[in-house]
Length: 261
Figure 1 (cartoon, rainbow, N blue to C red):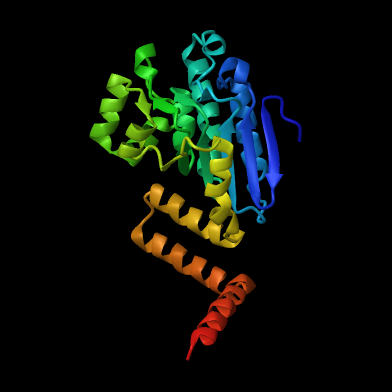
Figure 2: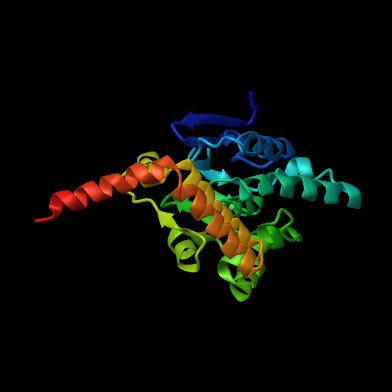
């Protein structure tokens, strides 16, 4: 499938999605959001994937937020509500993607762009990247599920502070509150650093990564402890009996045998 605003590539067992609107600071128009939802939904059944990455073109912005020019035409309650539902559905395709989605923040994530970053499972920041929930400065609240994500990640009081103050957090401050999971080093290009960061992730088998993500989703959705435990048990049975497990175990046992006196 051809996308107008995205560049979608495959690298072994890794799906790469890039928002390709640098001239608009990768602003999230409804068309961009629709394409994001479409690409993640289209690849959700690919059981050969171990992970996906999401980033933006250029070095300035991961995503500058909603496309204000386009959304300025929304003046009726039904139109606003429909936009919110459509946009939330697009981000839900990322939240529920069956393997981890790693957000590679090549630049700033602002407003709706911050919500997009929070929809990812893991967030890696370039050294110059910043994040801010600036919705309050526009007299609105988050609408794409990012407010709930923010509360889940940083807690209620911290979320209220970030939303109320619209603080622009640099990478170090974002890591301190839990919004950044890793920060690239300035000695290397962001692309090279991310390539090394992804090496062990790409080494994990698809069925194992699906098991990891399923547990995260189940816990995020606050399913009962019994349901989560049953899911974990079923995932273990599936991964334990897979030939990949036996092959890995045989290598470990061979090393142990070789090291024995």
